[in-house]
Image 1: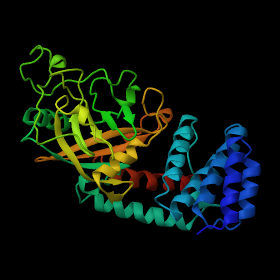
Image 2 (image 1 turned 180 degrees about the vertical axis):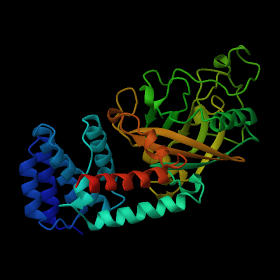
Image 3 (image 1 turned 60 degrees about the vertical axis):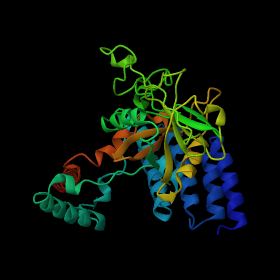
Image 4 (image 1 turned 60 degrees about the horizontal axis):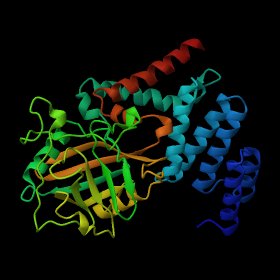
Length: 371
């Protein structure tokens, strides 16, 4: 448990960071936690160092100091989401400035390999040898998500709606689509496969979407006009965790859907919007919890006057379908940093592990030759 003095120091340091006074913030942190025993101290130091780097004309050394502080915070507390986002955002900024995090001095010092350099070379060689024998997919890392929701679908109540949802999911049409309308204590809405793509900035999200299958509504030759007939069942009503179709009137369901938030029982939506599933479980930042709790966490992101998320945009990475169970994986993305969909996706590219290890080995070899 941090001391009261330390907590008060953090507050003072944060105030100095907000007014772009990093030197004073760092001095405060040294006074209250000289040995940097708490990960929050490291995170705040990382924020202060990043400001110093910008004030110094985008100093490479100070930027790298900031990255190392963030990584120290994550080493002490891997679940520190603020530190993880701060580090990732900083790395994106550095990439944009052409500044590479770290340096060859990590691997070599005065011509001799460091401990990290030796370990990296050995590991690289090992991975290369293993990679020659095992298929790349076996070596690919598992993606990580900020949130996941496991959904039980209701084909007995809404067979056409469920079939359309499954096909869109299996075809990857929901991948990269944002939750564009979020109202805490009511619902979270997404699924606009036409205008809701995070990478495009989703300026018109909420205005598009169509059925994945033709049900006799719309022009058969133009799938963007296809809609789903309403499917109401008296045994399936709106309640917390319910998954239902968004629409603009009777029989106009397309691809957009919403989850009902915790504590909300919007009975006025019964017999107006098709209920076709229920969030039964999920994860938030690696922690297991109920699906309703995950929805509630998502509903608390900051929004503007039009109920659109601002600093953190819940974005569907993919939806896995297994029978009548759907698992929706979601990341909270920073719109100012651009799409980060490639971040986790890169880890699943066949041969990525082999490529990464080869790169490390080649970098070390180049450094040795230069010496």
